[in-house]
Amino acid sequence: MTNHIKIFDTTLRDGEQTPGVNLNVKEKLMIAKKLESLGVDIIEAGFPAASNGDFEAVKTIASEIKKSTVAGLSRANEKDILRCWEAVKYAEKPRIHTFIATSEIHMKHKLKMTKEEIVKRATEMVAYAKTFMDDIEFSAEDALRTEPEFLVEIYEAVIKAGATTLNVPDTVGYRTPTEMFELISYLKKNVKGIDNVDISVHCHNDLGMAVANSLAAVEAGATQVECTINGIGERAGNTSLEEIVMILKTRKDRYSNFETSIDAKQIYSTSRLVSLLTGVQVQPNKAIVGANAFAHESGIHQHGVLANKETYEIISPESVGRNADSLVLGKLSGKHAFVDKLKKLGFGDLEDSKMDQLFGEFKKLADKKKYIVDEDIIALVTGDAAKFEGKVKLESFEITRREGKPKAEVDITIDGDKKTGIAYGDGPVDAAYHAIKELLNDKFELEEYKLDSITGDTDAQAQVVVVIEKDGQRFIGRGQSTDIVEASIIAYINGINRLYKN
Image (tube, rainbow, N blue to C red):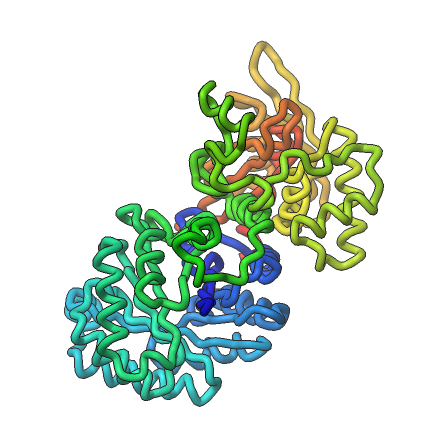
């Protein structure tokens, strides 16, 4: 008998809590559509009560996603749950995910509530959520530091109140795989009615064991794993979707009775999409999706791989969508080949007008680069999502040197009025930023600047991510171009426009 393991992706909620990440509605929707194409069962779209922006993002995603369940997170109170319902009700398959802490340290120091009060609140709020829909998930926050007997009590109570999924979070990434296996086994044995609901786990990676703990939970009987693309999330991150999926897929000798709905060949393109939109680069030695995941440096390994790939490769690059020998596009490539590539990368649901626009941008890029690879195509799609039109628009710029010091002359429009700024700096980017800031005459500050190469070739596109700070608020800007200075200016103006839109 094959057991279906539901993949609950929380990239847009817990993943967005990664320090420095701030996605707008357009970017979140693009990620949500890619997750749906990937085959994710449940997309946790956000925390509707957290802000109006989060509410609008969840509502938009709920309205657009058709195949995956769309969940919203809420605290265990009527105001949060009502707000969550108002956002997710537009989904074909909506879910309310409500939570309350159950560990002694949380109850005593954060909630200042007794066990009896916690159980009462949880059951009342699950029952309240149930008045809106059938699919209700309940999380006992910090479950892995909660007394097992109390978990049994509260889980039994919320099942009776109507919960259809019980989440068991290792909120601070404290436990080991053995402890996780033992707890899930204990709950399955002692919680009345647990066989009629899904058992979910939400593991954090503070001790580097999120994937191992999630796998142990599956072995013990969990039917849902909560995870993120690239394992992003608060502090050390969350369970990595690509790792848990590929473990179950690769180790069929041990997990032949487990399967997921994930289209593994879209894993790499999804990873790149999330990385480019969030500005969080994947570490080179990251399993499955890192730049070095399939690189073989030593002579012994290279010889073995050439003789038989299975000597040192347990996963083929092609199985996760990393096709080294795939169709490479160039300036002579036509629209048919370009559209075919988009579809293979999981972006086949784009409207015709958007396809036409991206093809035009592709042709411009092809005039600058000899070859266009998959990463370039993904970057075109993400670059379109990251565009943020507003108060400031770049017209042109010129960088020169005078007595060895860079001089920038930047033409911009501010609310439609063209202005020219001239400034010197320690480098061309610094000079350009000074020129723009002097024209705006504002007190915002550049808090962070990060430059990465989208591909490894000599004519690679650069992606720049900046963080602009004003009055304690942070605004992220992104830009990409084969010209580093241009990418830097685009990112800076992008961040400024987000600041003024706020």
